Amino acid sequence: MEVDSMRSIAIDGPSGAGKTTVAKALAERMGYYYVDTGAIYRSVGLYVSRRGSCDDVELVESCLPDIKVDLEYGEDGLQHMILNGEDVTAAIRNNEVSAYASTVSAIPAVRDCLLDMQRELAKEHNVIMDGRDIGTVVLPDADVKIYLTASVEVRAKRRWKELQEKGDTTPLETVMEQIEQRDYADMNREVAPLRQAEDAVVVDTSELNLEESIDAVYQVIREKLGEEEA
Ligand code: DC
Image 1 (cartoon, rainbow, N blue to C red):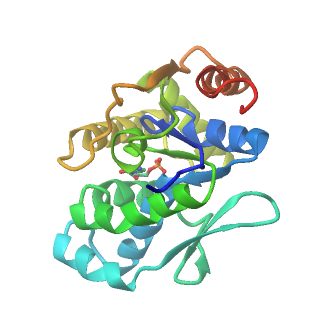
Image 2: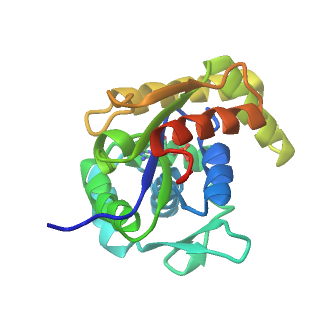
């Protein structure tokens, strides 16, 4: 029997709940690999957006053999997304790519294609992995499972602020509508919909600032792994 000595922490939840920021900070604190699985779907979304419409499932499927997504960890300790040799870390962070990522992520062939990649990473490293189906599908035996959430108003405001800092002037109402649409799509798709794993601990960050959110999640990890390990 294979002995799996690696630790894995799964953080799932809707967009804008703070998963990425919290997971990144804790990975650094704990010396774990941070894997942002949304960024992997975004890279596929970006590739498809450059080819045409993502509503054409056959076209998306036909693209898959040509897509090579690599994760590189730079000296900055951050995850860089490399799409067929091109660093797309910044290019995947806009609203258009968000919508493409959400659409391609509902296609079973896309999910199958990315599943092994995510599991391999967890086999090779202690990971904190964030996404939508990590605790339910990708790593059902994760040592710690957290469902990080917040109200739609709070999540929209956070995303809107981020966009404004980047010079994107999309109005708050539009950002809120986009978040609601993505929530609906992510929670109601047939394959691997976003839902809370039965054994996940829910952390609601609506009333918490960033530091408090990080501490709340760290507390759950310490309780599950024990103080020596976390
Ligand atoms: O977390 P994010 O906004 O970067 O994710 C982009 C899209 O990818 C989101 O609409 C849902 C999808 N996704 C997914 O289906 N499964 C994951 N494990 C991670 C993201």
